[in-house]
Length: 301
Ligand SMILES: CC/C=C\C/C=C\C/C=C\CCC/C=C/C(=O)SCCNC(=O)CCNC(=O)[C@H](O)C(C)(C)COP(=O)(O)OP(=O)(O)OC[C@H]1O[C@@H](n2cnc3c(N)ncnc32)[C@H](O)[C@@H]1OP(=O)(O)O
Image (cartoon, rainbow, N blue to C red; front, side):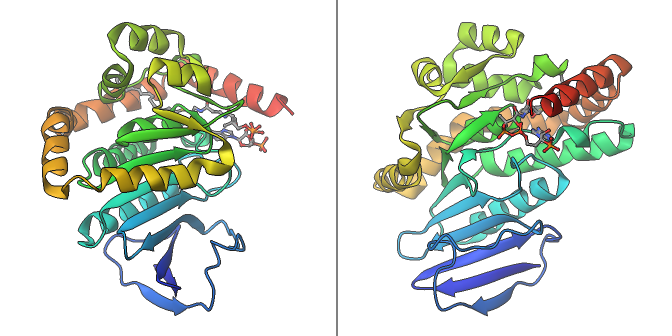
């Protein structure tokens, strides 16, 4: 189920947690744009908020999974549904991915989804990560990450899957810190990192599980632009408009030509990748590392 709130030339959609693929959508009228006025109530069931400017065809997808937008099963399903809906929408030309909660873009995979779960459970969970990534990385749309806060691990994965990354200046981190949790980033995630920052820097970053402050991330090419946090959305919209000056078809075909090999490789090796994830994540020593990491997060307070 999803709710649409149409207002002032914009259509606001709330994808709710139980959003089943292909379900009917209900339409609600609202006198004002609740999101634009910062008055959108965030309940646990509204984990992805989508607004689309009908004139420009630019959609903004806001992750809204408090407290830190960790990617649990529900959020992964909502994101995938939302990417696929926008992909099918002929009037949609671009997608800006951001967080409804500034200061944290996305805390990565929900670690609790990996802790003390059965091999089948984590296997199914990983498939949801793969499918979400396939829909975003393989999108015909201009995809822009408006990284308005921390973006570790799975947050970095989401950002790398986009065409361009604008990050907030300040004390925010981004990177692939998987090895710190005794996890190994899969080939398709490693490859996106190599493609963004080059082999040597990616190799080092991945081995030590580096989380970079935003200025270092800019220097490495992990993000493309830094702006004050309050300007991230506006600058993302301006940047998208520049990209939209290029004819859609030529841009999208060029994008697919460069991304098809990695997309095809994951499609081909999907089951093998799931099996590795199941085996690795449920290993006793990895479970212990995850437990210690969770304890460290809790002890921070
Ligand atoms: C050869 C190999 C082949 C195949 C593949 C095999 C294996 C593949 C394996 C892995 C690849 C996976 C790729 C992705 C992995 C991941 O994403 S793992 C997750 C990594 N994430 C992190 O390390 C981030 C952890 N969080 C933080 O650092 C901070 O929370 C923050 C900087 C994002 C935000 O800081 P604050 O605003 O200060 O918030 P708090 O730290 O107080 O957190 C609030 C609350 O949320 C809980 N929490 C935080 N992050 C997570 C999370 N990722 N999952 C679940 N829960 C999280 C935190 O514990 C707090 O909880 P409470 O104490 O309030 O209960």
